[in-house]
Amino acid sequence: MKLLLQGVEVTTSLSNSSIRNESRQIKIKPISLQPSGQPKSELEAASKQETLLQEIEQAQIQLEELKNQSQQLLEETEAEIESKKQAWETEKQTYIEAASKQGFSQGYTDGESKSLAKYKSDLEKANQIIDTARKDYQALIEDNVDTILEIALHTAEKITKQKIDEEPNSFLEIINAAIKELKDQSVISIYLHPNQYESVVQHKEELVTIIEKDAKLALYVTDEVEDYGCMIKHPFGQIDASVDTQLQEIRQILFEVSEENRQ
Image (tube, rainbow, N blue to C red; front, side, top):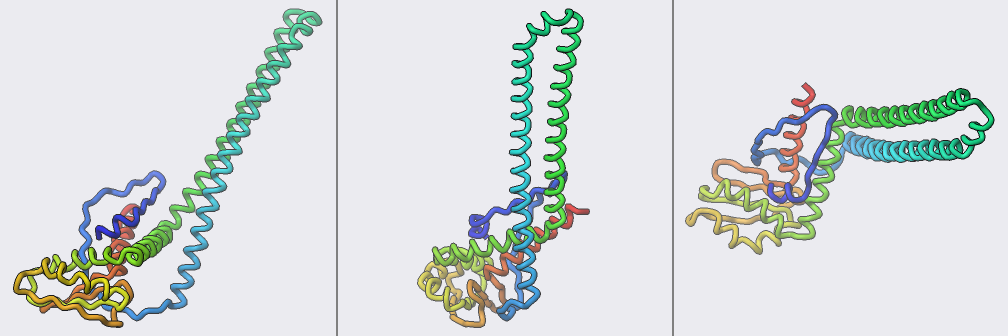
């Protein structure tokens, strides 16, 4: 699990909600090996996830554009007010000479009030645009929390497997963690996919040091285990230490937390 935690940090921010921090222990559980292949439903789900991800990215871009437009509108409004003030100051002397003191004062006050009113109106309009865009964006996130989690976990899976390909020894850390839970067993048999078998068997002596002195450790290669898979058998059963299995454990916990937060 140390490898997975180093590879990816997934953070989901929900409006006006907080996910309670709870200490959870992820244990490796036995599961049945499933045949490889992607059903049509999975392909459709992947397509839906990709479409949603694009919508989220587009919403982020639009929100940023609205913020920029709002800032530009405020700057232009302030510049316009300043320009009118300067022009007013230039013409003020002419008004003083051409009108009575009372008439001038009234005219100056009216002009200043109109400029301030326009500035406030533009500012309020800009804030409304930003607020609406933010609400739409947050609604999109909240309505698709599960799909966003799936996208994040799918990304985590890609990064994890890519790291194993680049650093084969990192797969050994996963096996080490699993063996430590079974170190008191008399016989431990590890079944690996051909793609990972060679790199693991080179470190067999290191794995032997983890188990009891009189225990026996055997490594086998089999195509019945999926790529990045690791099935460990012992006299009382077996455990699945595959990367996909551990990611599934994380997926289950994240969805449980998400469901609790909705209640």
